[in-house]
Length: 480
Image 1 (cartoon, rainbow, N blue to C red):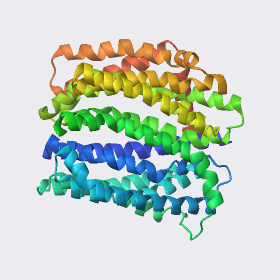
Image 2 (image 1 turned 180 degrees about the vertical axis):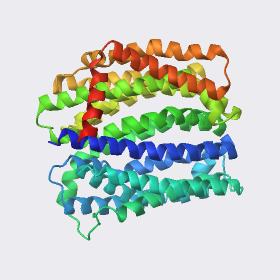
Image 3 (image 1 turned 90 degrees about the vertical axis):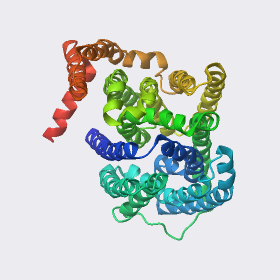
Image 4 (image 1 turned 30 degrees about the vertical axis):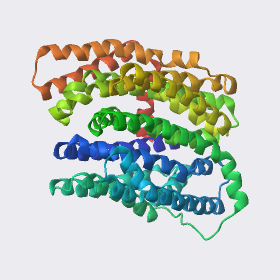
């Protein structure tokens, strides 16, 4: 079982890796958004739908199987690598010849070449997937920090330079490709794993027996997640899709830094205690309580400040994305429940349950998507359908753990309730700052300061255990 210090250290480094990458990427995105038009971002988002589906095939759930397997060795890693490389080749071939059909579907002839270029990242994904599995198994998250930051800076400079030189959508394409390539290249020189010319069918079969359920789950999730973008891009416009996707940028910057960092550390940590139900439940509770306490005020604060933030960062031409920012903020409130419950289910080896949950959630989600599309006939209506699906999915994800770990949805809601209670007065206080009528930059600064003081002041006033835990953990970590 990993000790507390190692878990916290891994969590910090994973957070710094995500935060550093996302903050730099955020700056690059701001620069590109001010130079390029929304339609360019929308067209890349259309292509990403198909690339993401193909990437799900390439990873095949096998990287997670490598993390979950306690005694995975060099033969396991090499077997997964060569199998994934074969899948990448087959998938790229399909995308290459399907590119004209994709362009015809969206009535955008320029997409053919772009699809074929971006699809080359599938081969990069093979290396990245195995490297990430190696890092996660050994909790070497410090190396991910230097990898991600080292890749995003030069790729960002390249993207902005090309945009300034008038390359349009190709600035976005080159930026994405360069970032993926550099990330893998840096890890090649910083971790000892290398693919060997070994392949064991029996090892691959054993790992795939666990991973195929995660593959199918991932595939269902990717198709479902991108289905909204496909519908918006097809039945509305690439510009509408750009607003929809850009609405995800700000809350995703927060949730991806915190929740992804937590999720990356949770799986190997949970896997180490998968046979100790009491320890696993205790770690789950701590994860949900702590992550919710951190994420909730950020999401609500951003939802209240959405208009001001978009005006300051992206400019007036991106104001139509404000309602999407607010909806995404509400969606991400439930992600700590999603991440923790699913990590626990994967850690104990129940990929069969994981798959069943994905099927149930997607049936419900597609029903809500179809209903919201026909009822609202607008991108904003589709977004509200996604919010309803996120709330319902949090209940579905938690339901098996009542039986498996004696930690059900009702108990989880009780654990996160204090954080939800505190954000009500905090959100009201942040909104009240709007009434003062300050210059934009000063108004945002006052809103942030007000939110921090009210939220943490109330936590201190009511002596919340989760607040004291975070303070004590930070203090103890600094002393060691």
